[in-house]
Amino acid sequence: MFRKSIFAKHQFELAPGKTVQTPMTFLALAGGDADNVGNEAFRYLKRYVFLSPLPGAPWAAYCIWLTEKNSEEPLLQELQLAKRVGVDVFYHDATWYAGASVIPGTNDWSKGLGNYEENREKFPHGLKSLFDAVHASGMKTGIWVDPANVDAALVESGHIPSKWLATIDGKALGDLHPSLTPTRQLCLGDPDVVA
Image (cartoon, rainbow, N blue to C red; front, side):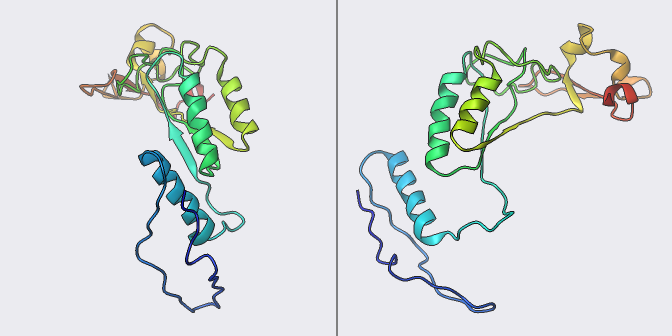
């Protein structure tokens, strides 16, 4: 694997207002597939080109979500990649909640939305187990929520009271999308909803 840099021996410390020219293109040579080449290019850029983060700088987040049963195993594999490339926060987007879609390849993130119990079909060992692995890898965790919207089926089943819905002229607000489960909006001005 080619790891030497013709620029590695040149370091520039700039005074305020000063500039330096840098190459417009970087070439990475690596054995293996496109992932190997991409990862090697990232390591090169991080080592020789990118500045060290300043204190309080924004974190780099790795955001992922899956619609399949037992998502733990692929997520733990993704966690290793995230660690290797220097991610700060391993962030789980939608579909971590009970009732979420478990049909591989679907984009139905609204199914089960509003249920704040973890999906044990996807996480047989629980979200805490996944987050413990993230923390052991030296990263922080993040999790997505959408407090204003819920799966309409949770309202119809009584899991979420219909009196919590946002309405206009008595009609509940929500969204109908051809590839998503219908949703309803909650009234965030209702103290019971907020509580």
